[in-house]
Image (cartoon, rainbow, N blue to C red; front, top):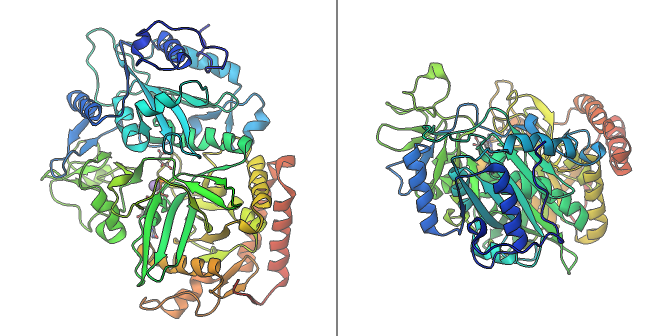
Amino acid sequence: MTLIPPAPTRSAAKPVKPGSVNAPEGADPRVVAWVASVAELTEPADIVWADGTPEEYQRLIDIMLEAGTIVPVPKRPNSYLARSHPDDVARMESRTFICAEDADDAGPTNNWRDPASMRQVLGGLFDGSMRGRTMYVIPFSMGPVGGPISKLGIEITDSPYVVASMHAMTRVGTAALEAMRGTTDWVPAVHSIGAPLAEGEQDVAWPCNSTRYISHFPETREIWSFGSAYGGNALLAKKCFALRIASVQARDEGWLAEHMLLLRMKHEDGRVMHLAGAFPSACGKTNLAMLQPTIPGWKVETLGDDIVWMRPGEDGRLWAINPENGFFGVAPGTSEKTNATAMAMMEHDTIFTNVALTADGDVWWEGMTKEAPEGLIDWQGRPYDPANGPAAHPNARFTVRAEQAPSIAPDWEEAVPLDAIIFGGRRPTQVPLVLQARDWEHGVYVGSTVSSQQTAAAEGTVGEIRRDPFAMLPFCGYNMGDYFSHWIDMGHRLGRHAPKIFSVNWFRRDADGGFLWPGFGENARVLEWIAGRVAGTAAGVDTAIGIMPAEGSLNLEGLDLDAEVVDELFEIDPKAWLTELVDVEAFFGQFGHALPTGLVRQLNHVRWRLEHVQQAQPVAAA
Ligand SMILES: Nc1nc2c(ncn2[C@@H]2O[C@H](COP(=O)(O)OP(=O)(O)OP(=O)(O)O)[C@@H](O)[C@H]2O)c(=O)[nH]1
Ligand SMILES: O=C([O-])CC(=O)C(=O)O
Ligand SMILES: [Mn+2]
């Protein structure tokens, strides 16, 4: 019986031979011993420790060009296109496991496996899985090395694509490794594509294995991922560590690890707001983080587009960082019109995955321009034929360093005090453009009832509405009922310093299926109202489901919207909402005793108001 090796512990600091597993001088012996134990299991041909330098990045590029994993994008300096295996294009939630000792700690929304039996299953799979390949050891820091909200990790992988992507997405290298000296407070993460190469065997462009396990061991803070080389399945610092494992650390240590964008909105007159927003995958985080306001005076600075870590500070406020170092963004739909910032940031030094290639050597995807250019090569490398589906895969992505975004805040690596938190999803009906929660507990209820149409970011039927609390359904590393309680507790801790909570929906549609709200840069109007609520200057009316903009308080100047459309954007249909509450109640029901009573109270309150309150009530501006 083969088992995966245990996580490094404080007591396991065995002396190691100098030069053992090619470890750099001065590496902590527990790091080296752990790497040696993984190498012993996976039997790589060679071991390379990533140092995070530009020279190393270039070597990885050369290796991938040689292997055919990437091809150059001649129109964009230092940019490349990776075409994945057609079955390895998105996160696989059905193959994602939380291996807590007790199934209750994974909760009803996660796939649970018993850790002991999973260690055995993985032991069998990882046994010799790196034969004939190079094993890379990637020390990294989430957040600046040594920062007050930062955390360390090591990813071991046999995929050069993963190493190159980690260079952009995290802070890789020697400084992180040095910070691990004398501590075991770092997350061990092992990834293998599961495609050992026999002596003399010809490799393929995107090796992977159809057997897949994305496994998390919350108690011992370990991650083991097998089979896929794609995004969230393989860049283990991202969803696996910074959300699933970090959410458990956050619960235990009194902070929050969230699937959120982070931005600063500034007015010429000195007004500043820091806002974090949780939307499910492919529901607009990257776009909002890079928003170019259409209304005069305002400017948005990007801080992060996918993950936020937040901790109460000494001043009692909630302080937030983006722990990542880059953006892994959705390509389709990105254009000069919708996100000019992202278009500028991708002009150079970008790895594209599963986009189409034009005849003149540039990238293309649906939504970049109205018409597909002549002579396209689709994401699978075939001449484009609409009969085969879209030219770019709907979950095609770009990978770039944060510093390449023209909108990046100059101080983006530092923590900021949060003023507002927004929750949103893709809801074609029913959910209004914006509303404010009455208080923190109501805000937690709003977050816990987020629902959205399924997108191409994970396997599943695109378009189906599912409940996705806090946009964390696929990313919460423990029982979601306990997670709700943790949020409620955070409100008690923050008290009057707590950020204000809002719900938004950019995706409401008219009878013909068109979007009612123009979205993108126009979303600044909604953020302006939110800033006004935070500052106590914008008027609101209290409805059955929350506080909406009072007549005239949402700036619609210069926007060509019919009054009926505006009404439709804010229409609340009590019948439909009461039906929705039946679904919410059923969803809540699965958590049993783990569901905090505060959420039941909020649910009953909303129901009572839907049944009894006919008239919206003006509320004080503050
Ligand atoms: N109609 C409309 N579409 C939007 C808006 N914002 C974003 N989108 C589209 O939604 C899709 C996904 O947007 P992203 O900003 O990449 O979503 P994300 O939440 O960052 O996605 P992940 O990276 O998967 O977590 C793209 O096709 C966008 O063009 C909006 O305000 N209105
Ligand atoms: O993790 C990934 O593969 C991409 C991503 O950001 C998401 O799905 O939310
Ligand atoms: Mn994104």
